[in-house]
Length: 200
Image 1 (cartoon, rainbow, N blue to C red):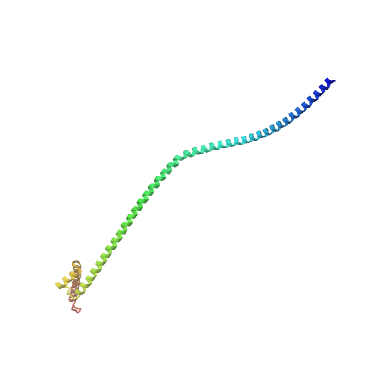
Image 2: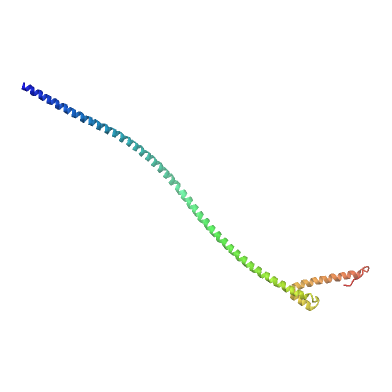
C-alpha cells in the first residue's frame, strides 16, 4: 500500500513537472516563433533594401559608363577645339596688331594733316599780307603814273617801278597796239575822200 502511494505521488509529481516543463517549452517556443517572425520580416526588409541598393548600384554603373563615354567623346573633340581656339586667338592678336598699326597710321596722318593745315594757314596769311602790300604799292604808284606821260623816259621808269618790268612790257605792248590801231584808223580816213577827216 505504501509502495503504491509512493508511486502515485511520484507519478503525480512527474506529471506536474512534465506539465510545467511543457508550459515553459511552449512559452519559449512562442517567444522563438515571435523572434523568428521578426527576423524573417527584418530579413525581407533587408533583402528589399539590398535589392534597391543593387538597382541603384546598377544605375550608378550605367551612368558612370555613359559619363565615361561622353568624357571620351569630349576628349576626342577637345584637341580640334583647342587648335581652333589657338588659331582664333592668333588671328585676334594679329587683328589687334593691325588695328593698332592702322590707328598709329591714322594718328600720324592726322598729325601731318594738322601740321599741313597750320603751315598752309601761315603761308596763306603771309601771301595775303604780301598781296595787300603789293596792292597798296600799285595804288600809290598808279596815282602818280596818271599824271606822267607814257612816252617819256621818266614815265617809263616810274611805270617800270610801279608795275615791274614784265607788266610794263605787257602794258607797253597794249599801248603800242592802241597806237597802231589809231594810226590805221587815221590812214583809212585819209584814204577815203568822201568822208570828212577828223583830227585826233
